[in-house]
Length: 423
Image (tube, rainbow, N blue to C red):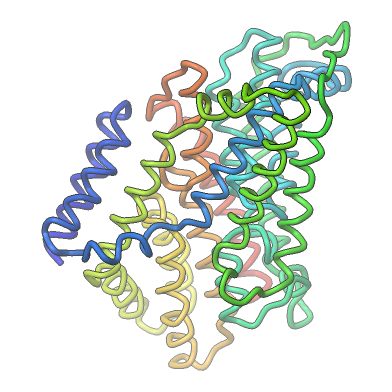
């Protein structure tokens, strides 16, 4: 256990201190887990979340073809025509990103919405770094709103037997959807404060021509298929169905694109633009997280929670919410939530209370905590990867300026709402 903890801490310190070399620290941490015997090499393939990897790779490919058509620039033109200034346009884009991610995986949302944000920034000649970061954290926020919004929501739904409607209204009360939405309203104030000086008027003198509408249709098809698939359990492939959907639609569009143009240029473009570093870094992170889970560190954290609070529900609730925020800023929230759900249930049985308030507190803290650090959530990693491809370096301070106030505003609002409704 000590070796796993040391490797984990050193890896994250390295990723924080040397942001340009994050991929190498992540891969180095993964190798160290195997070399020290913390994680068997035979368990590495299963440690990697191939559903996320395929979803990112497939959506990246589709987005590359989508950008080439000129459609992101066209959407930027349409948005600029409706907005009075740059601040309003950026906030509208972040809100749109949040709404979409309530129904679609956060990573897929960022990969689809970020190109529009980049196009707007290029037109207005403003720094895209805070804009793309805001899009990423906005998408992470809304992931907990519905059953299909995030993997952690799916975990809670399965464990507590919640349906899609239960996330809206459960046991005759307002459910977690409303806590998230009220938190989202609060973050609009934060976004306004961040971009309040961007008051330059926005104009779109002419609409950018679109060369091909099919990639855009295919992206929309991904969204629809992901929503539909969330309502069905598919034996054998259920754990990777979202990734398969993204990869399958991408391959179909790539083949169609090459046949229609009678050229391999689309394939060369996709291979050139694919963000290999982001994919490799995620593989490394998944392996390291599996290592500390195998070593029992996640279980120790869960046991620590269960021993705190002295039987006082409010104290336990507060510890679970804000402890989850801090932990999930550095630890992948999927294994953490999976480990904590039975602990929360056990606490509730001992105290003889309804576990819902603790369930919702856990989900709120664990889902939003990833917004504190640049690599606390896969959507953040994807957003930073997009900026890196455009030639922008994202400093940790750039992310903290947005992620920290955004996270705690949403968490505190959700924390108060859940307690008042469910305690």
